[in-house]
Image (cartoon, rainbow, N blue to C red; front, side, top):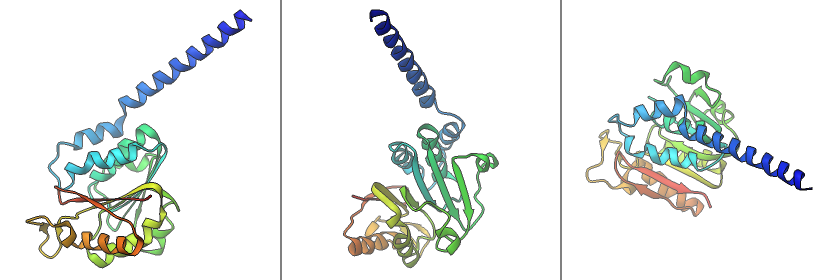
Length: 216
């Protein structure tokens, strides 16, 4: 009995050591995290919010992320860096081809569709349920409200909706001065959607603003 106990204990120690080594390997990251780190120093309209995006996806194991609007891949990079550590998948939709490294398209963590995000093709592209929904597209009130109505119901309880450009002056194509997130097209769409659904949102200022709406 004593020998068996020592054998079980030894096996447990070996397993714990294996888990520790795996955790250390995961925490060191890989090429996607390295790509993300290289982008953090860039002066872009979303740089200040990238860590928020990465944090929201990192906090959920096997996270399902739906991204509407890719452009140069700044937000995409933040999400992929998180998924590289915790697993999961990112579905991205944009009306234009994204300006991203070619090797991203070969990565099993990412799927991209070139389409209008409210088209029939786009609506069946992503999963029926997601943990994180990120929207950064036209920033026009009507379109944004339609996006919220179409995609927020997919976000599971405990999930989050992230909306860039809550401090964007749509008419003049510039950052609002002074910032008033509830006067922007994106902010007004969020306000009206929350009035319809009983949800609420908060604004993270700077870099054109980031709206955060949590699903209870």
